[in-house]
Length: 239
View (cartoon, rainbow, N blue to C red):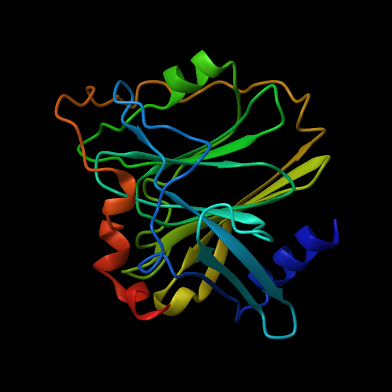
């Protein structure tokens, strides 16, 4: 698990930087996932390449056009009222950021794919991806509720959460961590390891958090939409 160890070392270094780049210049979307109006699930994601530099204590994911040869990661977006989802054909990485109360779900299906979902939460409700993945026969492997995790007194104001999921042929490691402006890592808040993930039993989903109603009007295709929170913040400067 050299990759997982390198990620852990960078996150624990005290001066690590993790960034997602290029999402404002590459269209979002997926050739593997389709939107589902009933659950507000959207393929708001990007194929990406990863660079892990232990000497510099940096981890970077850069968006690339869909189905680019050599892409080893999927970056998952964050948008109001959306369960933003990405599908990974392992091995590789899932990455998402700007968690400030949103929920994260990690699923696997019977065919060896892994899915990450960044579900936006507001006013106590969120788009629930569980019914969609139940229909796929997929299993929930990990769930994280970011409410209250990245706010004072735990961390300074304007801190947000990010997650890196590393999927190897046999193991999955999940690292949820706090970041300041510029992607500077402030601390790991959750670390999970799932051995033999293709046969691992499902865990229970969240209960009592409240799901949003289905959409009624059609939305713009995901490739024509930006990442609202990212565009409104400092990461717009990185390309």
